[in-house]
Length: 314
Image 1 (spheres, rainbow, N blue to C red):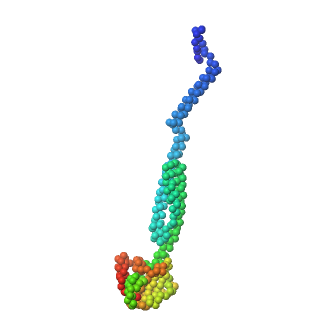
Image 2: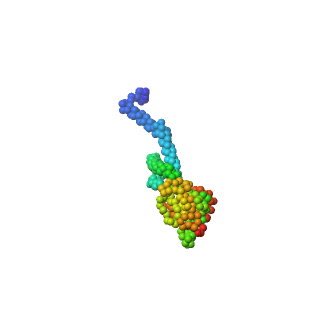
Image 3: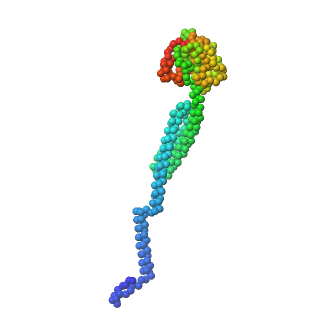
């Protein structure tokens, strides 16, 4: 209740409020309330977080941590796969004598183009992880196919090794003439000696140096009684000047099996074995294929004997 002083009657009288004044008062109160509410909301927004904002912030932090964790895991898997690829190309395939895998270099180029996306924003980071994951998946599929191929090659490895000459055709060999230019025993001139001459007693057993099939082809009369074995994969071996064969044409033999006996048939000036190794149609140094049953010292001694330029026996 409000009162006002009447100067005429010199007394206080009740103040009458007009409808207009009442409206102004109400509007003033409402304006003050609205202003106060706005100030409170602004202060609350600037200095306090709502439960919803707190929940969203926690979710965002969790997503960022998940992205970082996925990025580390993808990089770790990529490094592990790269190590597997290097061992595949430089070790496993070298052992199995297989060609390296032709990997798609485009994957690495794409990966390098997106290395800076992670620092820009979350969306770019997710795109980079998706890209790296796709590249990693295709690399793993390529590596899986490579391992399947290597597994098949490994299963055939024993057969491959068995078809490569790897032992001496005579036990405790004594090489008197090696591979290369040597003096011919009859013509007394330097000629290319296409094998090695190993001396011994007549009837000394001669062994197949690898698995194979006895050839039906005949060499010239100068070789005397001869056994030729086709080992497959481009390898052949020839055993000449035998006194007697122990195999027949078309017979399959195993490494270490007796195929004949040392003799002095054909153009020969003494009992010995003339032994040749033919690879892909080219005659190569047989000494390099004696590694299977000799110690390093024995191999080096035979290599030294075979390197001397002397007279061959055939």
